[in-house]
Image (cartoon, rainbow, N blue to C red; front, side):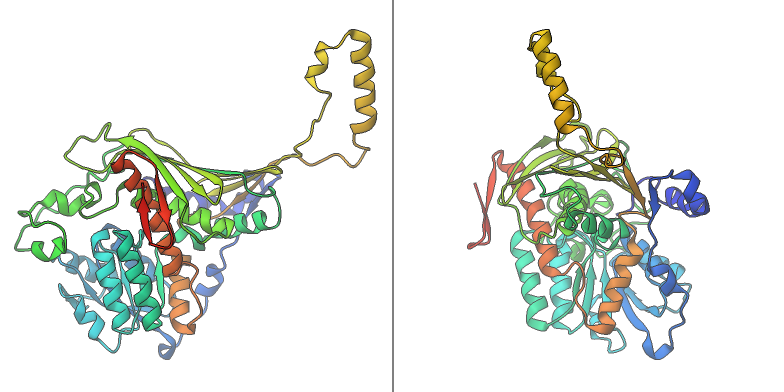
Length: 452
């Protein structure tokens, strides 16, 4: 999901790339995006991938705009329950004759559509993914994969039963920064992982999902009853439509909107593909008391096979997005557009300060002995300088979309399939379960349920 100031930052990166050597310093490396080379190639019409877009809202409009810039990728139809987004889809594609509809099944029935890109509220993910798989088409579905744990397993089953490609939209797993972090970790840069910290904070109404509803939104321009899907039936509410992330009936809160990105990047970096053993969450609605029922502050401690993973999310205090991987030989620290590697020797670099408790003669003898045994030989001093890697963004969406479309063409596995997406979503559901139950929860893999 796009964050505040994301586009200006990317524009700045592009305009200053030529100065990378001097701007980033001697220990900074600008990572190349392989997709840039692909864009230069022409794709014959017979080799194009034609997709249908379901959901052209905030995230969907961005996915649509990015997808159609990729070589050989063409949008041939769009579906949305709000008529204003039919107009938007035509504007984005530059095709005033683009077929648009409120009925997404019309896209699934078309033989000229190879795959679907879907960006709809969480409570719609299961239905659209399952229906798309049964229709014999591949689908890119926005994160989090599911609205409930049970739905996630239904989606995995549909993907496997129909042998369809499903890619979930936590795009950082396709970024060059994530690839570099994975390379460094599995190359032993920090040793065996001991702890992970994941943090992110916002402090503005838009960041807290208080989005302005479209001016013309009404029961005439929006199929409200269908939009509710399996949620409780309530009268038309323009704020619930625009701000659905605030309510558990439609969304999954900060866990499904923000945490899932952080966890997906962590799982990909470390090579894990599993739900956590347990989750213990604290939080509440501290600032945005606007009728929402999902917390605006959530802190969670996960247990991933004995490794503690701490996550802190806030909508009331802006803090940098940081993923910190800690091991005995160093730290990998990823921010929005950078990856820092801090090597650590894990040994004393000078005599122990405990020797200050020795008498003077003994202390001098100890220090002399220590230096004789531990001082490195000239030219063999350990390297302790930080190395910084810089890329477009952990959330650069084009590489993730490109990986999906290439998989549609080649039938090769995607990087974030239904199993991976389900495991990341389960962690978010466990965090929410712990929050609402007000106690730690545990994953029962055999029963596929959360227990207190």
